[in-house]
Image (cartoon, rainbow, N blue to C red):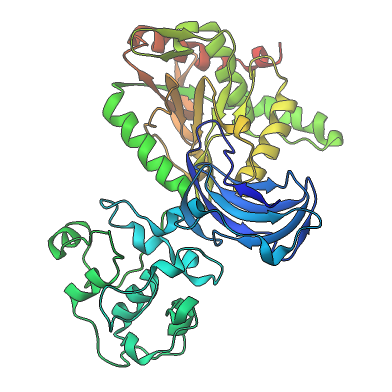
Length: 438
């Protein structure tokens, strides 16, 4: 009996994802534990393993398909001894999410190019037109043809049932055939059930007369946009700023790196700041909290989320129990987590959670900035570059290496005085860094 392979939930909060890449093809034999596909969630690209053994009979959702709901049947596995050609897709699996955009999601049609291009994709039979002479083409092909002034009626389609796909436009020259009118361009790219944006709506968002490129947002970027918008709209931020002298920390870092060289460990300033923030949070429990409306969660351990920039967006791998770990271990863990973050290979438990965040833009020469709180956390510390500045040292004007740190606090849960106390502790730990080794 054939086995339905369904879109898995790869994190506790995952409701849908992008089937980024199939690692198997129809006819392949798989065993339990074999990698079958790469799935892009809202935070990372993760590998999906086979649970059962058998032969891939049908692939129902093409790679590149967006907004595939958890539980959607994405492939059919023929059990051992079963006739692969006899395996049939369940009726419920035919209209995959890629073919059914919500009426209000006007950008969705342009986000399904690859799903249309695969012969095995189930949505293809739904493409026949309402009119008798309508040219069959994928939404992406229609948009590109309109931009380049190519008449789709002059092209032969290589997709399912003769549908024109992106690849068919590659041989056509810009300006070939008749150019679609702007109004027809927008409407033509919307499948049955979709809603096209008006020219007035499009004009509000961008000026098409300027040379430009439209890029589909990754699931990670969509999540960043949604969460940070919610954070700024719902969390009353209070910002507190302090200047911190770095000279003693830099001297200690140099001495530690000499002693750790044989172990292949090289501490960064950020590693030491993670440790300092962890200790400051544990010593300031009123800042190590989550606000829940009518409840307040107070944490007894400081798990520091550290902002890492990746090609697909910002992600925050977590150093668990930062106050209790040695700086060498923090450094090793941070390098390993940051490396896998940039490859979109983090596990959910490695970036979900945390009690507070650290964002460091000093490597870009940024002097000071105010970061947006990462909910459900109660605070985030933004640190800038260390730079030589005039500074009062022992009641005399001198020159010191100074860094500006700004804490963003959820004012519903954290009073200004409590935030100030935490920053005072953080400043003291950095300026007298031997306490980081105790």
